[in-house]
Image (cartoon, rainbow, N blue to C red):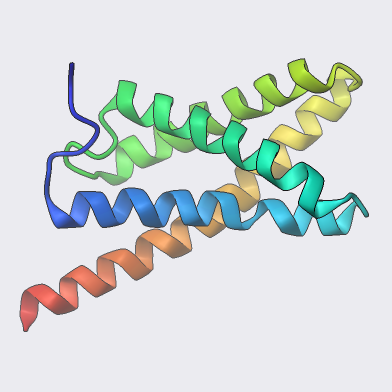
Length: 129
Protein backbone atom coordinates (compact mmCIF):
# COMPACT_ATOMS: atom_id res chain seq x y z
CA UNK A 1 0.00 0.00 0.00
CA UNK A 2 1.23 3.51 -0.84
CA UNK A 3 2.22 5.69 2.09
CA UNK A 4 0.22 8.82 2.89
CA UNK A 5 3.27 11.12 2.85
CA UNK A 6 6.76 11.05 1.39
CA UNK A 7 8.04 10.68 4.96
CA UNK A 8 9.50 14.18 5.25
CA UNK A 9 8.79 16.42 8.21
CA UNK A 10 7.46 19.02 5.81
CA UNK A 11 4.93 16.57 4.32
CA UNK A 12 3.72 15.45 7.74
CA UNK A 13 3.44 19.02 9.03
CA UNK A 14 1.69 20.12 5.84
CA UNK A 15 -0.85 17.31 6.16
CA UNK A 16 -1.50 18.19 9.83
CA UNK A 17 -1.80 21.89 9.01
CA UNK A 18 -4.15 21.22 6.11
CA UNK A 19 -6.40 19.09 8.32
CA UNK A 20 -6.41 21.72 11.07
CA UNK A 21 -7.28 24.40 8.50
CA UNK A 22 -10.01 22.23 7.01
CA UNK A 23 -11.61 21.45 10.36
CA UNK A 24 -11.19 25.00 11.73
CA UNK A 25 -13.86 26.49 9.48
CA UNK A 26 -16.55 24.00 10.59
CA UNK A 27 -17.43 25.57 13.98
CA UNK A 28 -17.85 28.96 12.32
CA UNK A 29 -20.59 27.58 10.10
CA UNK A 30 -22.22 25.78 12.98
CA UNK A 31 -22.26 28.95 15.11
CA UNK A 32 -23.51 31.01 12.17
CA UNK A 33 -26.49 28.71 11.68
CA UNK A 34 -27.27 28.47 15.38
CA UNK A 35 -26.62 24.75 15.55
CA UNK A 36 -25.46 22.81 18.58
CA UNK A 37 -21.71 22.95 17.94
CA UNK A 38 -20.79 20.19 20.38
CA UNK A 39 -23.28 17.70 18.98
CA UNK A 40 -22.58 18.32 15.29
CA UNK A 41 -18.89 19.21 15.22
CA UNK A 42 -17.51 15.70 15.73
CA UNK A 43 -19.64 14.21 12.97
CA UNK A 44 -18.72 17.01 10.56
CA UNK A 45 -15.03 16.90 11.47
CA UNK A 46 -14.84 13.14 10.95
CA UNK A 47 -16.70 13.39 7.64
CA UNK A 48 -14.50 16.18 6.28
CA UNK A 49 -11.23 14.72 7.60
CA UNK A 50 -12.09 11.27 6.26
CA UNK A 51 -13.01 12.53 2.80
CA UNK A 52 -9.91 14.75 2.75
CA UNK A 53 -7.54 11.95 3.74
CA UNK A 54 -9.00 9.46 1.25
CA UNK A 55 -8.79 12.02 -1.55
CA UNK A 56 -5.28 13.10 -0.55
CA UNK A 57 -4.08 9.51 -0.40
CA UNK A 58 -5.51 8.71 -3.84
CA UNK A 59 -4.04 11.87 -5.39
CA UNK A 60 -0.68 11.68 -3.59
CA UNK A 61 -1.19 15.15 -2.16
CA UNK A 62 1.61 14.71 0.38
CA UNK A 63 4.06 12.65 -1.73
CA UNK A 64 5.62 15.32 -1.87
CA UNK A 65 3.24 18.21 -1.10
CA UNK A 66 2.46 20.29 -4.18
CA UNK A 67 0.07 23.15 -4.79
CA UNK A 68 -1.48 21.43 -7.82
CA UNK A 69 -2.42 18.33 -5.84
CA UNK A 70 -3.63 20.53 -2.98
CA UNK A 71 -5.98 22.29 -5.40
CA UNK A 72 -7.29 18.95 -6.70
CA UNK A 73 -7.77 17.73 -3.13
CA UNK A 74 -9.75 20.87 -2.30
CA UNK A 75 -11.92 20.54 -5.42
CA UNK A 76 -12.60 16.82 -4.95
CA UNK A 77 -12.30 16.13 -1.21
CA UNK A 78 -14.59 18.87 0.05
CA UNK A 79 -17.46 18.02 -2.34
CA UNK A 80 -17.01 14.36 -1.38
CA UNK A 81 -17.43 15.32 2.29
CA UNK A 82 -20.50 17.40 1.43
CA UNK A 83 -22.00 14.47 -0.51
CA UNK A 84 -21.39 12.10 2.40
CA UNK A 85 -22.89 14.61 4.81
CA UNK A 86 -25.93 15.15 2.58
CA UNK A 87 -26.45 11.39 2.38
CA UNK A 88 -26.35 11.08 6.16
CA UNK A 89 -28.66 14.06 6.78
CA UNK A 90 -31.12 13.18 3.99
CA UNK A 91 -33.00 16.43 4.48
CA UNK A 92 -31.34 18.75 2.01
CA UNK A 93 -32.50 19.95 -1.36
CA UNK A 94 -30.13 19.98 -4.33
CA UNK A 95 -29.82 23.75 -3.96
CA UNK A 96 -28.82 23.44 -0.30
CA UNK A 97 -26.21 20.82 -1.17
CA UNK A 98 -24.71 23.01 -3.90
CA UNK A 99 -24.72 26.06 -1.63
CA UNK A 100 -23.03 24.14 1.18
CA UNK A 101 -20.46 22.73 -1.26
CA UNK A 102 -19.66 26.19 -2.62
CA UNK A 103 -19.33 27.76 0.81
CA UNK A 104 -17.29 24.81 2.09
CA UNK A 105 -14.90 25.00 -0.87
CA UNK A 106 -14.53 28.75 -0.45
CA UNK A 107 -13.88 28.74 3.29
CA UNK A 108 -11.99 25.45 3.21
CA UNK A 109 -9.65 26.93 0.62
CA UNK A 110 -9.18 30.05 2.72
CA UNK A 111 -8.39 28.17 5.92
CA UNK A 112 -6.31 25.41 4.33
CA UNK A 113 -4.45 28.03 2.30
CA UNK A 114 -3.63 29.98 5.45
CA UNK A 115 -2.40 26.79 7.14
CA UNK A 116 -0.29 25.93 4.07
CA UNK A 117 1.31 29.40 4.09
CA UNK A 118 2.14 29.08 7.80
CA UNK A 119 3.62 25.61 7.31
CA UNK A 120 5.67 26.73 4.31
CA UNK A 121 6.98 29.79 6.14
CA UNK A 122 7.85 27.72 9.20
CA UNK A 123 9.75 25.10 7.22
CA UNK A 124 11.34 27.71 4.97
CA UNK A 125 12.60 29.59 8.01
CA UNK A 126 13.93 26.37 9.58
CA UNK A 127 15.69 25.42 6.33
CA UNK A 128 17.47 28.81 6.22
CA UNK A 129 18.63 28.56 9.86
